[in-house]
Image 1 (cartoon, rainbow, N blue to C red):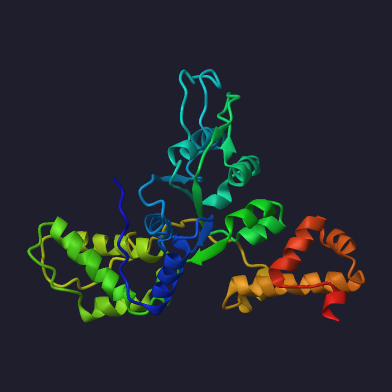
Image 2: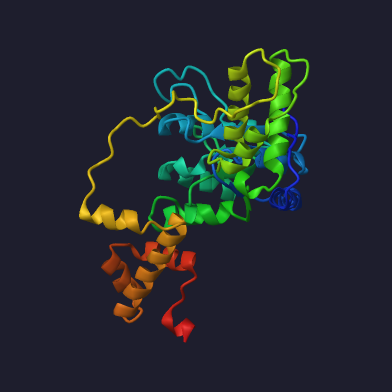
Length: 336
């Protein structure tokens, strides 16, 4: 039986996120959890459930990226006998199994648009029909969804439903990346090291060498806590039966001089030469700034006619409205 997961860390960034989770737990609304891969989005969902009034109910999880569309449909909503080849008996979907509790939908950004529409109906009316069935089933489920995708951008491109996004974001919890959690890297590294050392039969864990400690903070940890855990376990394993300090972190498991990417880089062109010489420090921020600039130019060129501006940029009206909302752009009449 699943229980509330323990969170290790003392940083301000982590405590801010945990306080936000605690404040939202008792509010029985859908919550979206965002963050980079490996930041602990499932832990956030776990705490939102077990700190809520639904804590005695089921906590059901489903990774939307792990199944193709037809299987995701049947896993979410269930099916009746004869609904498709091989469906010999009725099957409860995750929504029915989560009745009275919480359904955690991970990797929400990968959900196909057709299923997003069905999900929206369950959120709005608390009702569903199994595949191949005609009976309306009522469910009482709180949804916590997680993603590392930029859903407002996806919605502006027509890749995610705005109405579903609105219903899922009563509020948003952002899990901070490990590089923003000052002091937590050492705490987590020591926690994982003690645990894996015990599992390997070590009598005690003597700690990290000064060089290894320095490596912990020099590295950027793009995979966050999950990557840190793997690196500590790998480093202990490479050390074998020597119960001395970990002298060096094995961050890259590939043989020296070899990486996962073996393809030759494409030949440099005049265009890529310019780009390579002017790479921004923050790519996402730079792209957002350029996107906002193009929007403003299109609106200025069309005398703030949003339909004409959308056509100029090859967008639909809904898409340009979404992008204006994303960048906080208002119509000229509102700005003047």
